[in-house]
Amino acid sequence: MIRSIKQDWFSNIKGDTLAGIVVALALIPEAIAFSIIAGVDPKVGLYASFCIAVVIAFTGGRPGMISAATGAMALLMVTLVREHGLEYLLAATLLTGVLQIIAGYLRLAELMRFVSRSVVTGFVNALAILIFMAQLPELTGVTWHVYAMTAAGLAIIYGFPYLPVIGRSIPSPLVCILVLTAVYMLTGMEIRSVGDMGELPDTLPIFLWPDVPLNLETLMIILPTALMLCVVGLLESMMTATIVDDLTDTKSDKNRECKGQGIANIGSGLLGGMAGCAMIGQSVINVKSGGRGRLSTLIAGVVLLILVVFLADWVSQIPMAALVAVMIMVSIGTFSWSSIRDLKKHPLSTNIVMLATVAVTVGTHNLAIGVFVGVLLAAMFFANKVGNILYIGTEQGEGERTYRVVGQVFFASSNRFMEAFDFKETVQKVTIDLSRAHFWDITAVETLDRIVIKFRREGTEVELIGLNEASATIVDRYAVHNDPAAVERLMGGH
Image (cartoon, rainbow, N blue to C red):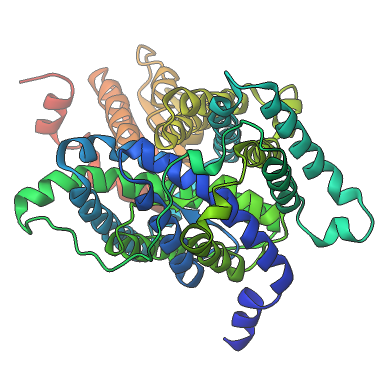
């Protein structure tokens, strides 16, 4: 255990510290923007980001991943806040945390194994596009100074690492923010700064129990929102954890992450914050800036609070162009450029799943819907592919015919299974050899019933041989071809 603590917390102190500071600076404008989207005071998003980041540093299952208030979650809160107010949002945040802890104990994170690589790639690309699109309001209808500052910021971010010695010791996004802030303060140019985004809090968060009646009516009001927040929050967190796993070539505990997200959201709700989840943009910033351990997440949360409460006058001077440059770097680094090159060599079905996930996610701005569509398409393509792996050969004997079935029989292949038999052929006996076949579902069993019954109605004796144990179990339990009353119902009799 001591070894694990050293590895997670103290194996990369310098890198985690500097990366955490960069993330804290990048969190401020986003937390304010997400609060505005949700229709609440900027303090709600900032307190949430502080609390979630600090708590998840201790309870999360993915070291180095950043969690805070997010846009995907903020979009789900709009209706509840508009119709019932902030107090009900805080109650929904607490319920979201409880549901996520339950999901962790139910090991629902195991469902991530049903999310194919093409869906993950589509999710990553969609997020990269959404991150870039979120910067466009800061780049439209502005003076040339903004474009110059943004271009200078990108030049620093990509050029600074090439400097000898110092280029590798300090994260270039941090240098970008510091240099552009100094230029902005010295020149006094008329461009937007963090201070223009909204009022920063001037006090520490305090314990706050939601002022709502504790009854069934309140539960019915907050439950739909809490369920959506729970699903979207866990989905985005699990996908982000998978991406950070790939970036750092390490594994993470997804079920622990579910519980950690729940505990963090409960803490956020009790301190007057909104629900949040993992942030792919900030997580990528953290990893790219050298953050690897839990210390980076903790520092990001603590520094965020220090900056907005005690150093608000300085933080408000950070030009938005500097943060836009950092987020453009994130979007470029997040996008899987190899997926574009691989379009020619990957199967068409894989490309369709990836592109559909991107299109739906970007079109709806809802990560859950995009991933759901991707998973559904991937499942359909897989079922179709496996359904086509079915071969049925025949052998003619004296007065009998043997059918040898090879492959998987289930809902997607049941029609092909049925069409392979000649019910009009005049033979005394039909043997169906199923020793190299496997029956998976009720549809397969019902198709077998119809085949047997049709042959019997033509006066042909039918024998089934070779069923493996699993297939025999499902056939014995659900088949009805030996039950006359059930046969009449199946074939449309009365």
